[in-house]
Length: 236
Image (cartoon, rainbow, N blue to C red; front, side, top):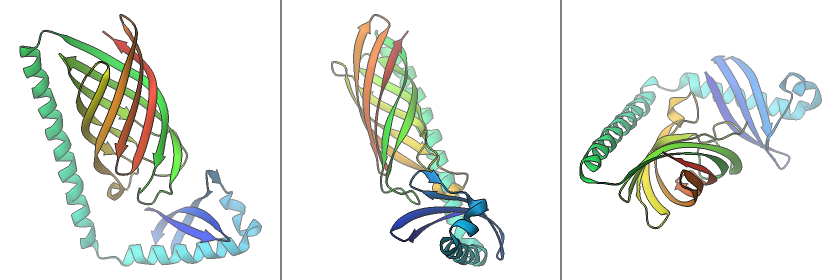
């Protein structure tokens, strides 16, 4: 099992990642200072006081993990199942809306967005406040002025557990400005307890350059990050 904790030493903030096999058997995997990864193989020789503090806290964290009642994991797993069911329901509802709007509207336009930007991570569990680069790929459909979009927006950073969003949004196009709201699933780690669904609020502006698309800029807010992206908009 991979565990993580934060350590403050000599006015520096370290993120420590280790693998625990048993209560007394732990393997140090990574030590991160800001965005720099320290050499864990040589850490005991180069930074003995820091290594001793890390080893001591690893033992405590490992002991807490292996002695924790297993029943505490059940609500977390149940909660994840509820979130996944909600995502399935939202996806089905959006497909139903697509079908209905296709029946009652005369104008429709498919598009894809390719771009990137930055995310300001804040109030995210087990992740220090930081700014990371992100990539955005989305596909959407506009019926009259109603816009439905499916989005994948991963972070491009070596910082552990930064947000990686995928989900769907629905909005309304007002002269190129598209305010929207949707459900985004934040997949941050193989540890399911750290992944969660979040409501996202977005404002996009599409700037047409030609008949087949143009440029876009978008700001997204969730409870754990602020994201600003831009790129190319291709219409079909």
